[in-house]
Length: 260
Image 1 (cartoon, helix red, strand yellow):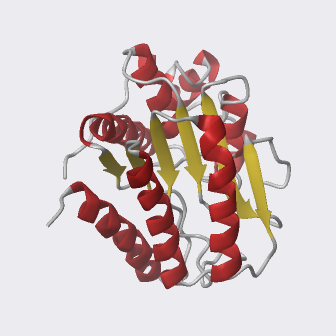
Image 2 (cartoon, one colour):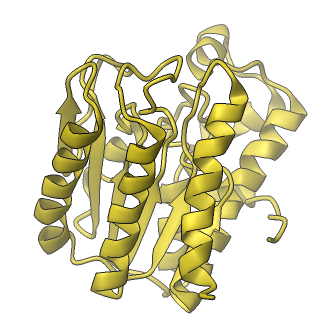
């Protein structure tokens, strides 16, 4: 486990507009911007956002070298080029994609977004990128209520449980992989599809989420494609439940990255 440095402002400018970055840096976000972000501005928030984002850059680089990488944070998929949104200050997965491409380390990516909320920021940022395929598996009746168009969107009805969830994800991966032909898979392993999540509206058990993780990780293994995992959202009333789910994901990645 390594501590991440902070993403440079020049790197963040590969994703976000100079105007937005200036307001974030100077603490001059408007009232509506802060409301949309859902978090009050502070120097600590900015530092945390930069380090979390750089963590995904480094985890993606680890994956390209060793096959697996993981950021115990990240998955901030609601951030747009010119705005933070829904607790997401910067878009870390798009940042990692563009930084590694600029360094000549990466071309095609498949983003498997299993946070319960559609990754509209990622979809918008990748809309004109023919080498980035975005797959979002999310609750149909959930935030954000105005959707962007991903490469493939899977809208799940409220109350979808393990069998329906896993079947929909498996079918979506079968569709996405031949089109994406990825050099790297980003997997946003959100804890918020869990049945007890405060913002989820789905009914997936912890065992179901573990099976989801296994499905994506085994696919990467079978394809021989490096995989970078991020945590994304989780809003359980008791934070220990979110931690349980995240720990299970981390354990599953570690078991593949460091075989017994």
